[in-house]
Each structure stands twice: as structure tokens, then as C-alpha cells.
Image 1: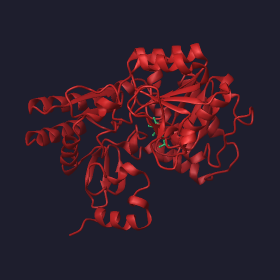
Image 2 (image 1 turned 45 degrees about the vertical axis):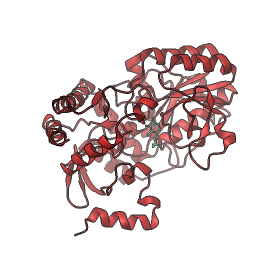
Image 3 (image 1 turned 90 degrees about the vertical axis):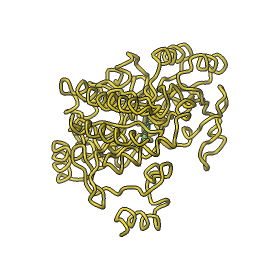
Image 4 (image 1 turned 60 degrees about the vertical axis):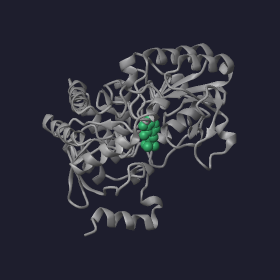
Length: 426
Ligand SMILES: *Cc1c(COP(=O)(O)O)cnc(C)c1O
């Protein structure tokens, strides 16, 4: 009998390109049928065939409290019955802005938007408006949403002016984006030495999570701060994924570096569409209506979405939240490392707060090229083996994974036991 997931996927492809509304969901890189989910509770999701999985995707990061956390659902219900949207100010968006500025010391002012893409796109426009310069530096393998300036990836060479990595991005736009290697301090210094006076901004994932998890070298983040200061460029930390995920103050808290602007999303919406960009008052004051840089949104600061974000952030600030989350995540990576070693599978893994990376190579990668060198066939076998056993990991070798506060010791132990079974017949 054909599965309900399969039926839905076939139907989806009639009117939705590829059957999905975001490409990785299509399972293209692992093969097989995407699971259509009907329900999620805590650490578990149920698909259209009634199969239950322990979930390590968490909607790609937002669900740090797990699925359908009662406090978040109650806050959303409460807000919804009072009206879905006003297109006028509400008190809850002020509360969220206050809370974000309280929790992240580098934020003096913040503006709410509806996605991470909007946050990064707006932060870049703001940096360009602030400096009067056009050139943007990004790092290969870092993802900052899908706006034109950011869909640019160079060849592997340092200082290569960017070529678009998507059809439809004008070369005239891509040429203002320069792509460097992640964790490469000499490459960064060379770029600033040559182009320093033209560089508006450097945007970076201070813990990278879109080429699998790549940890920054502390010296790399320090060099970013130094070079931007010396040359008057705006340093943008894209913490859409790492914010309130790797630690209470994100990567900027762990490494003790204050960016000029920070972009946020994912966790700050608790599963609803909320993004934000914020930072130094002097820069943020250039946003419309205070200043000349235009930025707007019909649903920005939406009261229902903001309610989910507020309820989530109020729970993650509880004492010991990130210690417990990090411990649970380490239980997973340590456990997987141990069973891989037991069966002689070339494998490495690391955790940062509630985020983890699994790599089918012997050492954790430090940049895009090393991430790409992981054994993709091995990942596919692992992915499908785990899926069949009821453990849902991201359907791509190049995505980070997520543990939530709803994942219990027994859940993670069950996942490690399943991996033992997969590696045993490797
Ligand atoms: C997810 C992500 C984005 C894009 O956010 P969307 O809400 O998907 O538009 C931007 N930057 C980083 C680092 C992300 O992980």
C-alpha cells in the first residue's frame, strides 16, 4: 500500500514546485519521500502515516522548548483571540524589544521583522546607508537568507569577487559581495588591506550552522572586530540560528565580542515568524522614520508571532536552562561518538549549547571545503537508518542539528542505541 506521505508528496508536486515551500525539505540530497507532519509534542513529531519520531530538526532551530510547549501555545491563543494583526503599534512588540535589548547587551535598539532573511537584508542596507559604502564581505558556506546580495559564493580562491550562486541574481549586484574563507584570518586581513575603505560591512555566522556546524576560532572573530574597527566597517553577527541557541547571549556572549549589528530569528519567534535586527543606537537611528534608510513590513511585530517569541524567551532565561540543554546535547554527541568508535566508523561530532554537528570524517571541519569533504554516502546511510528506527535528523549532510529542552535523557539514550544498531551493520 502506498504511504500517505508518498500520496501527499505526489499531490504536493502538482501545484508546489518540487512539492515543498523550502528546498531542503524535499529530501533531494538523501533520497526518499519527505515526511509530512501532522503533529508535534515535546521532542516528538508524528507523520501522516502515524509514525512517531524523536525530532532533531526542531523546525530548523526555532523550537528550543520542543513542539507545542503549553506556555507558548497558551500565549499564542491568548493573543489570537484579541486580534491577529493591527498594522499599528502594540504593547507586546515593545516588551519583546525591551527583552531582547536586556538579554543581549550589544543591542541598544532593535527592529522586528518577519524572517531571518528580512533581518539580514535590512541590516546590510542599513550598514551601507550608514557607511556610504557598497562592498560587503561574507564567508563561503555561511547562509544569511535568500536576498540577492547574499546569494553569492566565490570559487575557492581568496579575494574572488563574487559570482551569483543562484540564477536570477544580477551580476551587477553580486559584484558588491566578496566571499572569503571562514576561519581564515590572513585572507580577511588581505581583503581589508586591499579594499578597506570600500567595505561597508562584514556579515558572518559567528557560529556557522548552514554548512553543518562549524565552530569559529576565537582569533577569527577577534580579527573581524579589529579589522572592522580599523577600517570603519560595520560588523554584523548573523545570529538568526545561534542566537538564544548556543548560549543565553548567543555566540557573542561565548566569545565576548560585541558586533555593531546583530540579526536574529528562529528562537526569538518560538516557531512563529519573527526576525529582528538591532545594535548600536547611532546606526539604528538611521532607520526610517528616524533616518534615511527605508525598511518596513505589514506584519512586522505581529502580535500573535510576538506572543510566541516572548513566551519562549521568558522560559529560556530561567537559571540553568542552557547548562541543561548543553548537557543533553553533549549526551547525544558523546554517545554517537562512542558507538561510531566501537564499530570503527570514521565519524566526528561536536555540540555548542543546543546545536550539534555530525560529520562522517575523522575530524570536525573548520571551513566550507572541509565540511564538503565529509562522506555524503555515509551520511545518507546514517540518515535513512535512523529515520527507519524513528529518529528524525535533518535530511542533508550540511545542516546542523538541534536538541530542545523537551529532549529527555531517555530520548537521547534511545537515539544513541538506534545509532549503535545502524553502525553495527555498517
Ligand atoms: C535561517 C537563517 C537565516 C534565514 O532566516 P529565514 O527565517 O529562513 O529567512 C539567516 N541567517 C541564518 C544564520 C540562518 O540560520
